[in-house]
Each structure stands twice: as structure tokens, then as C-alpha cells.
Image (spheres, rainbow, N blue to C red):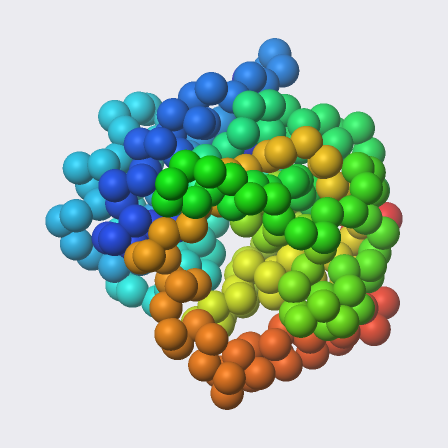
Length: 251
């Protein structure tokens, strides 16, 4: 029986037309013998807009639910995640060639690693790309290494949470994504690093699309009061986990 990587994609109606590009990038991934992927697409809402853009492939399933944000959509999708690993692929992003195999090799090769990330290129509307600033060296990221950097650099982690590849059991142990209107993926990343070592691949793993309709480009995302509250709870959770004494692996 094949071992499985579950690709979790949260989507809302405005980003649905990007789904085929993400699917194409997934089909172009090469995995070692004995491994397969399954994609779980969860709509944040219940519209007639998304389904026409979902690829007809037995490896892809699509569900809908009441709107609650990408954190809710991704966490609800975990109910159907039956693989050993979970990989995030947002509806408007594209995997770079080899990304899945590199993530898998890192975690299969070292059981003390709980998660992996990779280099990102921002993909602009004119099809040009811009490097994400702050990349660390290729290799392991030690436990608790991200939080202080994040706070000292304007609440920007040196690795991008949209590239996350994580052990499913560890993801479930932390309760999935934080229940926040934004920054839920950063909150999860910092929580993971508070309890486990990770890995960074210096090879490009993701093209992170920038476009006018994305949630992080809207005015509420930069509202100072909300942003301060989000950052405060993200930091508090990460520090509480770090001080708890619990860590991965547990034994």
C-alpha cells in the first residue's frame, strides 16, 4: 500500500480560477516509489463558483462549509486527511518542481524533524518574481529559533508559512490552524517551532501569487488594532508552548 502526502487547499470564490494552475504544479511533482498524494480542497463558504474549477481527478476531493476563514477551512479538511504528512498549497499558489520530494526526504531522513519549509518567490501580476527576504541557510531550524527573529523583524518570520510540510500527528496535536482572521498560518508555524525542530530547503519550493483579490491585500489585514491583537496571541501561544516542556518527538 502506498504511503500518502495530503495536500490541503483552502479556497474562497475569488481565488477559485487559480485552482487549475495549482493542480498542474502538483501533477508535475515526482515522488519516490511507494508514495502518492491526495488533494483536499475545502471551500470557505458554499457557492456555485468554486466547483467548476476543481479538476476531475480521483486524487482530488472537494467539500464546502460555512464561511469562517482559511484557518477553519484547512482545519475542517483535516477530518479527511489520512496520510502521514500534510502539505499546504493555497488555491492561488504553485509548487516549484521537486518541492514535495525535497520536503519528504528531509522528514523521512530525520525523525527529530517535525516540519519543513522552503524558499519562496513572490509571483507578481506581470509574471515576474521577487525573492522573499530573510531566508536562512539550507538545513535544520532548531527549536524556538523563529520566534525572536519574527518579533525583532516586524512580525515577519524568516521562513514562509505557505510552504509548510508537516507530520499529520504533530499538526493535530497542536489543534490545526489558529482561529484568527489572518496570520493563522504564521501562528501555526511558530507553535510548531516552539515544540519541534524543522527544516528549510534553500531551493525554491513555492511561487506565492500576489494579486488584488487576496485576503492579505485588503485593508482589514493591516488594521493596527486587529494586527496588534493577532500578533499578541500568536506570540503568547508560542511562548506558552515553549515553556510547557512538551516537545516532538515525545519519546
